[in-house]
Length: 167
Image 1 (tube, rainbow, N blue to C red):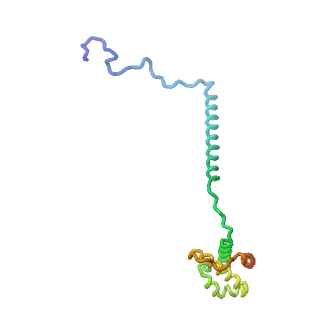
Image 2: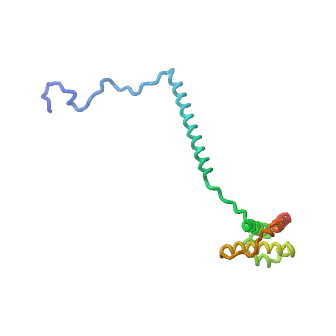
Image 3: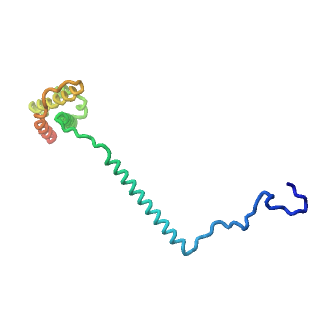
């Protein structure tokens, strides 16, 4: 609606409203309360943060505790394969890392190994390797391994102890 000249303008029809007083922004805190309120706020925030950290650590510990534990294979075949691996490690440390890549027959035919170990120790070591090969490869083929290696485990373990000390 257009107003004739000379008539007062209606503030409702003008389009913009003026606040009743000027906006001064937020009122400052009182000088005596500001430091106490800040300290309380910081303490409350610290307590909440500490509680959240405790809850998070308990949750993590529970998740770790609930994980299934790996089963330990204590069978004679597993111990035999561990001895076989230990023997290969001892020989590789003594005769070089290339020995790890050799087969049982190649190790038996190596003149340096035969000279260093002697006849009896070499024969017992090859017995360990052959028994380990039978367990390892016959298991994969589905065939039954030849005999129970558990009777020889103590002998082979003593041999490996002697070999590791003789380095």
